[in-house]
Image (tube, rainbow over all chains, first blue to last red; front, side):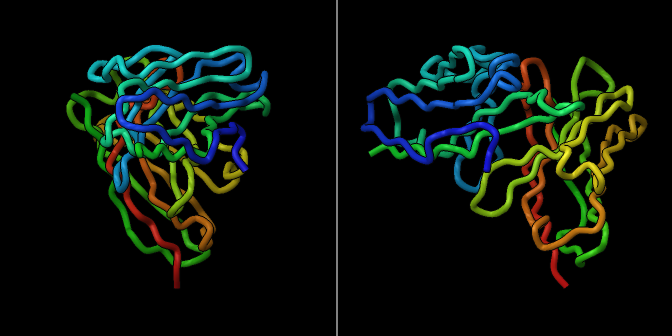
Length: 112
Length: 119
């Protein structure tokens, strides 16, 4: 069971917008930055968002991130069939003495 | 641009030690304020953070694996390594090496290497 909770799946039509939620606690999301990753089938994850809402170079502005309290959200607008992938949130968790990185269980996005 | 590549045996026997190396190219492992990380993913499952090392040598490990994990860095070879002892079938996964920057931004990732634990 993952420390961060994501919905197992979301779906939307091409051109539409979708949001993916990531719920945590004060020991992780509440006091640390959140990042988001896209994993296409058979490939390594790719960073989409870091520091809650920043996009690395090369990531289109169709992808956005936000954080409020102990939850974070990834938004994707103008959905394309190529966006079909698994999406993961990640952050640092400080609940244990040494801390650890944690990820959500992943959300499968289907573009209908 | 920085690229990472994992290498090591694809098959490890139960109770033995899994050893992987990550070679960093396109930049120095010693430059910048980065952590160098290992993350794994069992088939069909999510990502599990294993641990990370700073170029100073300081490490952080997942408490669930801490007793079995060692991550080290060799700046002269621009490599960092993972050792996981006393492996079982539950350690079968794709293992990724990656660089962690600001705000838990992990980028780039290696392509991943499948390690199977089986006799």
